[in-house]
Amino acid sequence: MSLLKMNHIQKGFDGLDVIKNISLEVREGEILSIIGPSGSGKSTLLRCATLLETIDSGRLEYLGEEAAWTVDGKAVYASKKKIKELQSCFGLVFQNFNLFPHMSVLQNVMDAPVRVKKVDKEMAKKEAYELLKKMGLEDKANAYPCQLSGGQCQRVAIARALALHPQILFFDEPTSALDPELTQEVLKVIKSLSDLHIAMVIVTHEMAFAREISDKVIFMADGVIVEEGTPDEVFASNNERTQSFLGNYRNI
Image 1 (cartoon, rainbow, N blue to C red):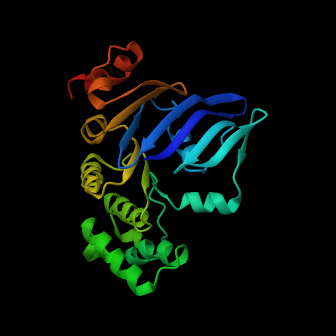
Image 2 (image 1 turned 30 degrees about the vertical axis):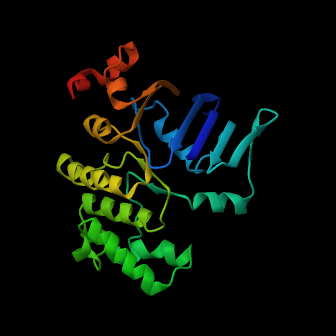
């Protein structure tokens, strides 16, 4: 089943095209990694997919329902009510965690289910503990973000996203703010999520990780998809632009 379809997406800022006619699809349980040099449009594409940025033109569908489409060359979005409904099917993990500093770890994970989905507080608390256990953070439930390492904060952010039972989880450079040791800690947790059969879209600079975890890899450069395929296909590609980017990763 198709969870997300992006067709002929265009997005520019101040007259500069950042996303140029991009189309992609994410299916149920699929893990898609998006790789490419800085400034290639990866994060902008993710922000368009998660409705944090509006597209200029193209078509955006979640679960077969239109979130945005094009009329007379310009994008038109569904009603606020429909957008809110569609937003509930995905979660987003940012590179800088975005935790609430005044809330404990447990409260951070519980907040959205209680506030957005009106889940019973005790039920939300029980689920939050379970998620923190999965993240290896059950002993940090009453700590505050300022008392945690960057890797621990990112694991809390992942638990918080999972608390809403998303069908797709988006990661925007989830390890870019972390040192190498903490990076491995977070990547290990993301790998462990594959047994939940949640679709994942991961923008990353971690090539070995992308190759190991992905069902599909997209290589972007200059706002376009240069190459798309299985990890083996993309990493063994003869395309000059892909080869140039992957460089030392060729033998991963």
